[in-house]
Image (cartoon, rainbow, N blue to C red):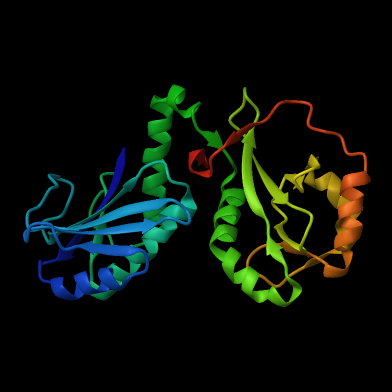
Length: 286
């Protein structure tokens, strides 16, 4: 299901269409489709790192029919379409662009949950999205059993970390530190998702504090350990790094052998319930 924002102006439909198209075309992750007919242009947002897609559509005819909108607000035939079930972190990525468009071209925003076209307010736009998303969930509970769930803050940290992994690796390249890869799991009878961090036992690892499971796999030995339990034993070997984000640790390069030995020789309880591996794109915040 698609969610849509529409754009209006007060007492005029005039805006610099060519400049808007140029702005969108220069925006990271956006590609302007030059093959569409002249009457409609579509700018595709596609951030493959976090599996986020949206469409910015600039047409010549109105596609909205509402009696809620005051007559002084005129449809400029621009709309944004995105999937309804995205977590808040992804929505805010699109709203960053929407906010810039509103400021740059003096646009108002409208959605079917609004009483009228409104000046851009992020909180209002987020609330509308969440309201319709929750209403959809209430009507389609069975469908949501195919999706997993994670609290919004943890999920936001996961996406932030994924987008910053290359930067973190560059920052700590002198230590040969490697940001951990994430895997995601859930219990078969539950929607609740777990974040697992994977380490091969070689280089110092960089790991977010949000990890719930730690997977050691050097090709010979594989262990799945509760991360909070592991931290009780190796916490002193980790250092909080200046990531500019949330709490992220790095294994002290001098402690790699010690930590590897602790994990491979230590007696850590294995999970008592079989865990099912899932994909990040199937994890929601509701």
